Image (cartoon, rainbow, N blue to C red):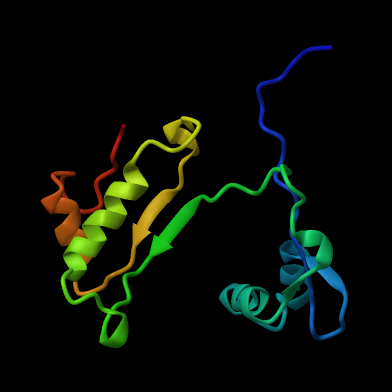
Length: 141
């Protein structure tokens, strides 16, 4: 028997389709509705209307699907805005934390792509203030 360094495949997440109460994977929902709806509409339906099954929550220690892209937006204002921190300062702290070496020393290739949504340009300003290069530049650790 040969040992493989390939990671185990991610478990397929199943959700309950509220239209008929049946459990389906995203691929199955996409196939079911592709003739009636655009893929983006099916994706939104999957995320907002379909509910996780009881089995969908992984037991302790079970592998979870990898996060490929992490999109962030910084929402602050009104009662949630800290009086002593600007958006750029908060964005800088988030970027520093996300770029810190992960626990367990995961290889950079396994880390998600960080996709910062436009928010008064605070992420671009923070990125450049941290000396990480032009906005949109990849960071290698």
